[in-house]
Length: 309
Image 1 (cartoon, rainbow, N blue to C red):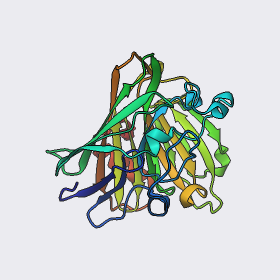
Image 2: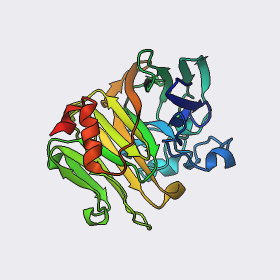
Image 3: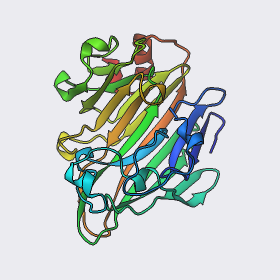
């Protein structure tokens, strides 16, 4: 799909995922793995591992329970495995339900691992040609209850500088890399900023964040991606997760990546019951270079009030 300002490419392969989001004349803002071309037809079975297709994917959470509610892989069940992701959600082909100039809808495979089936919708905003609406519907396919959240995972290049509004440093939990290895990581005046910097070996870590508002933004080159979502109280999010999570592997997977992740509320679904979650992506032009203060001022000008402190 495309407007006079941006282009979005979605594939029905690999669970149905977005592989490209870019403004006209600019490179892909998303980070996509070489496996998209080298392994275009993955085998989907209970023993499948993860394949780094990257792009924008949707998981369910919490991660600690990914293999705890299934019987088809006893080894992963016994190990309380938290990796790899559900192969039926991330590797199996989805079916097109709608393909037109303004909206794409796909239905994913029914998963015997998590008991979930996802339907994804990508829709252009009629009034704003720089904006895409992303909605996911998750349905319990089992005859017993399941409990999950819907988990958006947008992979971008590791040198992207990300801004997340956070009212207190106590609302940030870092797992992995120490702060000292991340020269551009800081919380100041109500904002978490994170960027890999120039570390050639690549810091690696994960940030679990309770944001103070329903947005985050990433700057890379001459583009800015603003992701908006429904802000949730901490009590709605599974305690092992954060509503916003940032995973940085600056020198590892696919030559580095940064994940901009959002968790929806954790819910119990009765048989056949469904839940929904949504994001709004706005991809803006940026000519201000690599200056964090100027970037924050730009976000303030976009009426993202938390950036104005």
